[in-house]
Length: 465
Image (cartoon, rainbow, N blue to C red; front, side, top):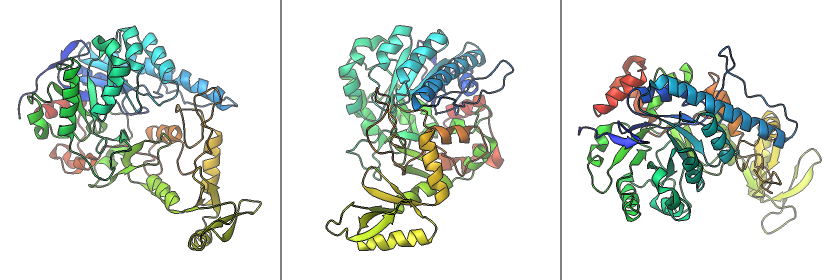
């Protein structure tokens, strides 16, 4: 294993090891502060982070507003308060070492407003901001205003070119690095484009070399690239360290930090990680963001898969092969299916999937009554956690809607991520993870269910293991 070369990241020389900024409450001030205290880069999530009252009890994110707009404003307030709190915790835990970054999603609700609120409320405590899930053009201007470095998350050189040409060239001095996130292997939301095949992964090295070549054209040959997604043993990546077509490079870990003592996820979640097998992490297209995402296959994903399979196209009048009349809803309104689909629909109804819900694509999905009630309730209770949501049709616009029918094939992402972070339910909620999560079960470091501290993990990573 080649020795790691320290890099200057966000204004300080540190180990080129970065904690991936996982979503709601999964990377917090405790974990990111521990990474920084170990001489690396810690990253807490700025996506609806937890905040606490004066007694130290977590403040439940309960919404009282009668309208989506009112609940949206409550969500923004929770997000800013939580982000400031986690920055304070991280700063205290870091003991003045390493660097503290905050991760945000550009497609989350009021991303710009939350960034301003947290960076203003935690001035001097946050050294960098990583941002993906969309094209964060304005992240450069916002971070420059507060003297904070920015780190866009991209999955291709083409994406970075667009960002640089449109905005980043104006604020190049605050570009701390570029995070290349492998769209086939990373956990959470993935940056697969329409031209890329989700079932045909491409190797990372040629894509990162292309990114480095482009950055060099822009005078960024010494700006670090963070390799994210699919990184487990550094010995497998040692040849990157002094590869002139890639270096300087740091390595970002999103999945391995889940299984540390400082990680805030539940013990049930940690135990589950130790049991995963190759293939248990599933690249799917169910997210209400419209992005692909990678998560652990459990009953939550199985039910979404079932919804997709219990689906037929319909017309409101007999057209072409759609000649079989079928009645839907309490009023028994007629729609027309193909004879084959009509037979399938009657079979599903006989099995108890009696509720036919319309989708924006002129299809029906068949679900049980309890699931239909849950879907409708969650859509009604929407608090606008995304800039645009396929599930509820919320949009962060003057109209407050995408203008499309709400899509019952998806789910309320805020609800499920809050639940899995604050309970032991790991089967009926969404559990994000990278595709290498199955290695917890075979890596001798975790033998007999061992859960290391962050410092122990970093000491292990440096050895190549």
